[in-house]
Image (cartoon, rainbow, N blue to C red; front, side, top):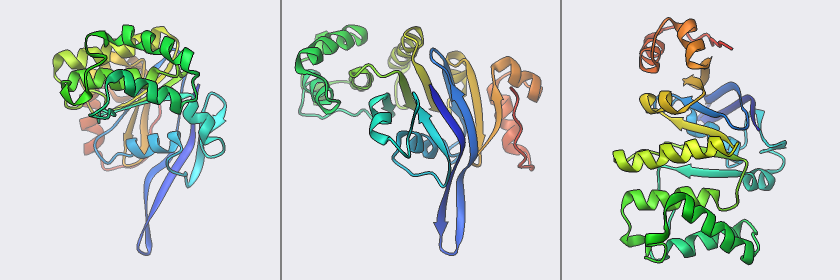
Length: 251
């Protein structure tokens, strides 16, 4: 469903180049939650921006449901839902107005849009504040609207960039439940985060990104075998302290 093949992005710095993403490859299948994990500056957000078609790759490609971001960006965006740490809501609109606006952006017929609104409102428990202005909502409520917005066009694939940053325990649980729902619906889910304990709880497979390269990839059991460590935090500490830059991949 999501294919990333030798994806590379280099930026010019004067007469030199900085390689932010260096030949990264992975796949996310339908019904799978894949954790793209790494410290700040590892290349996670740059990778997501190339998948979304917001950045052109220097090499390789990203593909969603058979469409490449570099060739058919509108088709890719139509097949992706995107959730970031920043709640994408307009303060003076109500959640109902926000959701109907985004349904219109995605070209959904007004009659179907109302049906889809009810579907996502039920899923995210929005009805109690569906007609309040978003400026009056709590951070957790805004994130629930943000999560619903990403699903209004019922995309087959989802990208979540640090979806629990700034949320308390209760609001974070809403995100966890949301990801479980996406998995049960057969959506391909790519979660980018540096919160390793949460990722270990949520994801089926992992890609450990450091300095733009995918150092390890696989299930938790495969990573444990490859690294000799029991949890993701230990794996990362070892990876960050290592002086060598060779890519290590377990499959």
